[in-house]
Image (cartoon, rainbow, N blue to C red; front, side):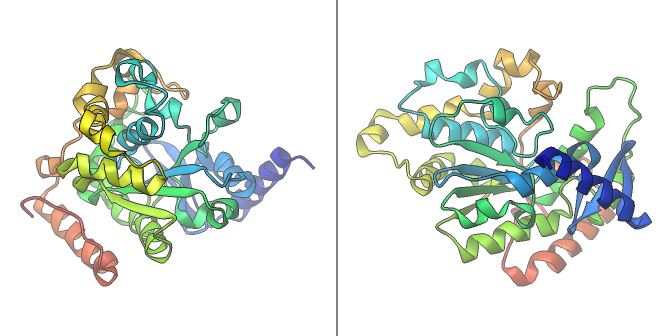
Length: 321
């Protein structure tokens, strides 16, 4: 039996056995609860396939995140760091190619990564929880970089993205309060947010040589330090001569939000799945949640933060909270 047939059969078996409370609609699209997490229907088969069949190389680099947590930025940074001897900033593929096409998702339905001839090391990304990663990734010497973001900003960014996905001008508006309630109950792609973040947080504490846990807010605060931190963790440290030449600053500038947002490919191009690249660039700010969340929403989120993360010594920067 082929691997595709096995995945299809497993998918059908899972659907048949789902309980009523393990199915939800978000913006009119089906989501299913599987192995402790919610997965969008259009990603379900490919997620199962990636979990079952992906074989990691020892020098692979996997960039992981919840959706809308700084994924695009992290892809640009890591691609630039590991390929800096191949491409000068003035000749970077980022000038003409969206970061999501340079660092493909493991669970992409198009299986685009199977069509790419990679240089070494191979770069992949995923929104899959740590608990759902293939055994090969977990047991190999491949590196994982996880980027997290405070849940209030992540939620607002994800809400805006969901409102516009998949570029359907006739789509119904996504009610903020309903979307927020579902988010708090863990019902969103790759959710619950809390379990997704904690999975990688705990794994990074257990295996700090394998998993680097980053925070979006810390990158914004000191990008130079964190570029060097990333490079060292991945095995591509900057030499003193590179630092003197300003290579770190060049990468920081090339990958900055304003710079990438204004590249023609990101203003007018489309990603592999037909999504406008411009959807990946909204504001990139810390604290934008203050413009949208009501006091009662903030109070509910505060309680969840303490309840879910308090005992794990995990905190997020929340300006003016």
